[in-house]
Length: 227
Image (cartoon, rainbow, N blue to C red):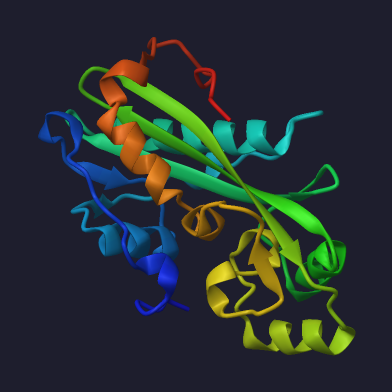
């Protein structure tokens, strides 16, 4: 389901210039991330990362560490295809009580996730990687947004599962789906929950030259990410 252009989270988003007028490439097939970029006014092409960029959770890896690693690996799998471009990659998970909740495998898994989140506060983390191919400079950052979910009855869960809106979404829910049983705590970013923190992306692009690190050809791990 596409995000409605009438949703508040789609209003007031602003684009900024890409450093050195580089073409912007979104290393993701997510329609939600693409729509957020379009709503802000960015011009970009889509070139999804390879499937093996997401290679499972490492032992004792935290949610912020996971999304930082995945975002880096997604950008890494695409950047070699371009001589001159700014590659944007992202990865989003929910986390509740130390348990990482990615995309559900099936309906039963989605129901399990929703029962885990029911009546509890939890976090959504998005890792963002910007990688400029010409100079091989890269920045990775993780943005956190806290949410509160109401207690969900079995019938509420059943009704939501029937909509199929849970498919492909971290934590088995979409903040943009119009559910009145989920709300952001404090001044967290709605676009971060959807999958791309637009406010922070703008800042990272504007400050790219000062925050990016040069990636060595043999480097396999992401630079230290800010959280």
